Image (cartoon, rainbow, N blue to C red; front, side):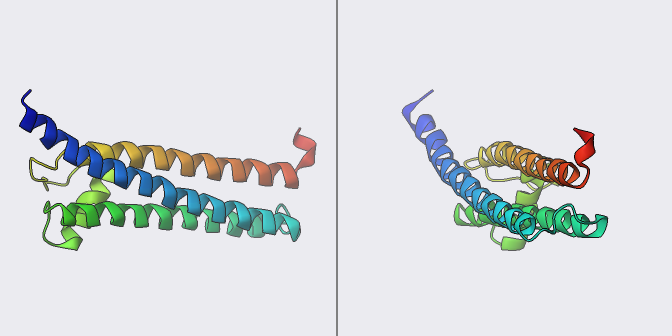
Length: 152
């Protein structure tokens, strides 16, 4: 591998690392907002009170996670535009959504200099979906424990 090839790999890796850090921060903020919401619902005595109340709590949690994912996809799309991979944000967002969800590129291909960003986005997207799933599962488990204390 030549010196030029090493630099060509390091630049996308550095840009991708910055986007990964931003993705984690955005998701962390969403998780913090979710935790604060759940704590407030519990403090007010609404958590575990009824099926419909619990359903609304779970729906809001899922909505917060979805918004975080959509913002994170947009962050990667902005990076794709800044790198010259796409000239239009809409196309970059579509490509980003395919990467982030590990669905695939949908026929869109990044320039060869920046294509390493696709697998990086797929890796962090899969991890963030795992974090969201864990949070939603923990919430549902907690709501069941509060509503049905006899299940211990």
